[in-house]
Image 1 (tube, rainbow, N blue to C red):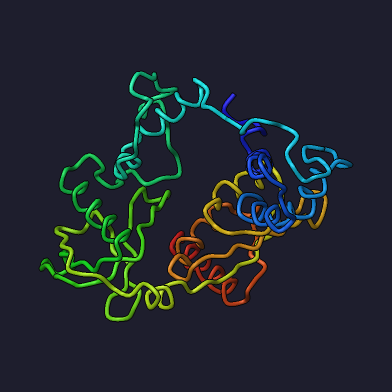
Image 2: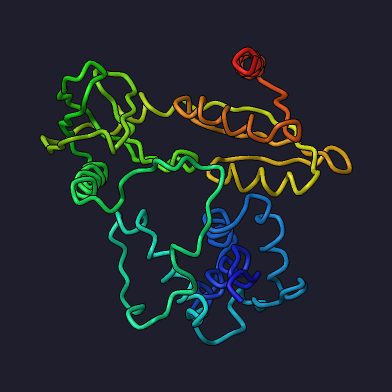
Length: 303
């Protein structure tokens, strides 16, 4: 079994606490720190209490030491290895050159040709193209090392242009099946499709602190979900990359507050509209107005 609760956050969090309490007494401060880093916010109210002698999981004795005597271990099963091998066959993952040590003789659980995608454009990036791979890895290296780059890309009038920018991150659009470079160019946020870049050169380092101030404009949107035909599950999967808080307000109705970055707003709107009447935008008002304008535009185009 691949997806089982023993591989979830709670088990891993408790395992780390027990490992820390093997040789010496563990303090509440250390437990709370581990819980904060490994689990969910509400877990800080339950895990420390339940690990005590009188709790549901009495794995710490009165001396605040682990009752187990060996370090916890969760070795990969054959099925997990086959699952990982299948994921690593994805050409998008291959761009990041992941370490495949230990999987050389493992048969993948499935192959790329076994997967049928829907709700995705067919003109994705050329992941097998050598030039694309080289440029992608140059950008990725620059992001990791905080290096400025020069990129050459075509303009709409048929000419080409070099620009110097500070790369912040690479983003992947599931809907478009494309990677985008998010960078700062002349003090402003700039987005370029990686597949459009013709050449890339590294030219030096930049100040990370200043970039963070310029790029990460956080915003929130409040959504109301009517859980019909597994709408809640589909919404949670679609928006899995976003920070969110979910609240049940009625029998089959939920309120979800999503946190996103300003440059993702248009793509987020398109994703929200794809759910139709099962997903409603409750606020803020400016976001609601933009959704209404897009619906009106779609209506006019349809007629």
